[in-house]
Image 1 (cartoon, rainbow, N blue to C red):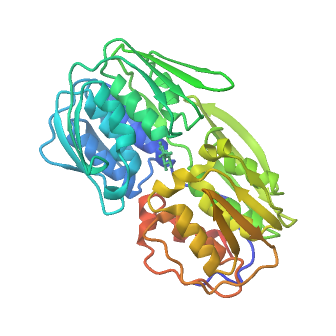
Image 2: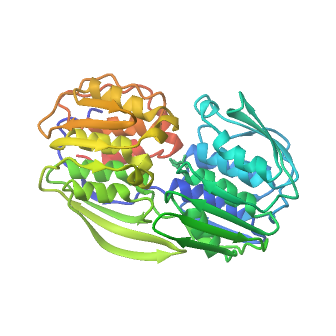
Length: 432
Ligand code: S3P
């Protein structure tokens, strides 16, 4: 149904369970002996693939109504899977579980869909080879990943030069079955859910932060305690309706139970800087994660902004929707240092740029920096959107329809199922 001419975003909204946390809670409860319970797990395809992978590796996972019960195997106790493991579209799933497998005495082949089979894996496997795992990649870079894990992983020190939580988490998961102390140094802060969850499961982990680096130290004690965990709402999914509410004057949206971890809500800071009227109603900490309720009441048009490269990891998945916001805000917005966007589910930098041009927005790419010449009066549209089955590109340009005068054409919408299966339902419920 066309969205143009629909006016405001209204209602009380609970976003679906967080994707990053859903992957991690399945993996970590799958390494804890005894019964853990997971509530509000995201039912997106990416997460279900991780669930199936954990089952193939020996965890028992039972769905009872909306709760998942997980009975894990201990670190080092993964079973030899009977077949190849298929991660579909999920970079997080394949990279994190590569780390887990690398320090177990098993031999596994990991595959993905067409998009995943063209994403770089060496950034992870080069670290995992150092601990003693034998790893093979297609063209030395891409999946399928063939891993012969080691039961005797070396405890090493790792420098993470590419800002990626997936690289960091893969190493941390390999450390679960590594005797000795594993040290990790991050040069830019990335999402820290693996760290927070390990602390909540009483693992021996220390995290220190200086102005330049983050240091993680894991001392193997092989003992993860079971946990009952309710997955908070996903800010990366909520970003679509929150951004829409900031763009449409007169909107009033209440967001309940949203993850408010500072490594994930960079986009809220950006929207506020642009003039978004977003307020925190309440916040609480559960299992080392900050969770909040918010209200967005927009009365004024937005202005442009500039993001520096250090800001990007804190909103890496929200750049597509922020590009839409920037297009309908007054002035020149610059997002600097977007190289990582070129290796996501699609080359997001290129697709954002091409689609912005199609819907009538002036934009430029200069050396991985994206320039958007925005105007709140701009209303063109009628572009034929190319999304290459990238869920976040599709959802972002779908939102552009609330402003554009002529509806943009978007074909093949099923890819939203990877991260946000009820996206279109939520759109019809809250945009009217
Ligand atoms: C994720 C990390 C990010 C992000 C992805 C989820 C995670 O990827 O883009 O959607 O859950 O660790 P990178 O680690 O490649 O930055």
